Image (cartoon, rainbow over all chains, first blue to last red; front, top):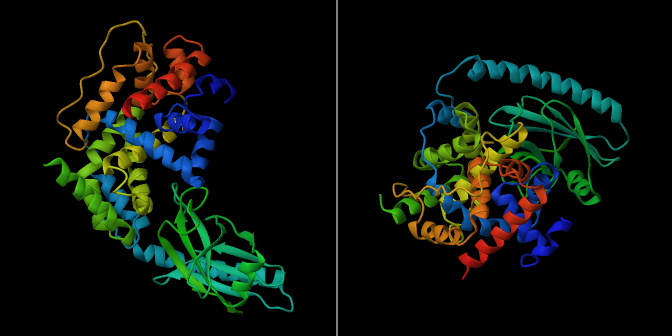
Length: 231
Length: 185
């Protein structure tokens, strides 16, 4: 951004906020601005100010009616919503069978992980579930201070990523890391988090924007939780 | 509908979303989807793509509703910004902006007049912005227009206006500084 020093009437980061809101950035510049927006409150406030200045221009844009199917597709992705027109992918029975099959697969994997990481301080395990649906199985290796998370019945979402939280007795969730729908993820626990795990904390998974929760606390729906127990 | 009442209705529905109230999201959708779809469609130029983006937009609203602060921003400002941002993300994931027609910096085609039929934004804010846009040089206003309505990047604007990239960056940055100064005077 060396070529903007001639416009010193605005600081560089405020120009970046202006360019970001206007939408002229691309590639690494846009990514950098998005990251700042998520993690830097001062920058986020500048973005909000530019939005307030520029968005009234959108009054010139004509309204247009989207197809009725758009709302149905949105509603189907909200927690607790039943899809309006069930197909095989929306059939509860199908997903129950799928969940059972994948839970079995997850249990097998958990055993494999257990056998692979067995040590004197036995592992702790938590099934992360909600309403009878198990989304992930987590195994904590107490000695190494790691947690391995196996996806069970969890389907990926193009706009959100699953994030793992550990909730000790104080009830305040601490971020552990991002998970994957298609692969086991092993995350390192800080000494503080490992201590929570040893004290049988609860693990929970929420859906967050790509890159994880911007606030350090869960911002999206919690898709499941489970208490750690010894195997 | 009365502007203030409409605004309060949208803001109130957004405030109920973080509790997991999907009917609140449906209310927001009912009141705002035609506008947000128009915004996405204007930038993407393709109904299918714009509908995909619209889905992402309302799922983002569902997830981020707790971030909305009604005392600091108008709900439509917040919602339109999310829609533009998502549409531009989609555009950048593809190749080029839809509208790459040359822009003649010297031609004397006036911007569309502010529309009176959109009850969702304050006409005061709109008039103020238009007053300040009018203080810009023609080429500056046209460059901003291409960026805002067609989702063009610096490079695309430079190509459309047959101007070196560095010059285009200067135009836009200078225009944004002028705009801020004018809006805050």
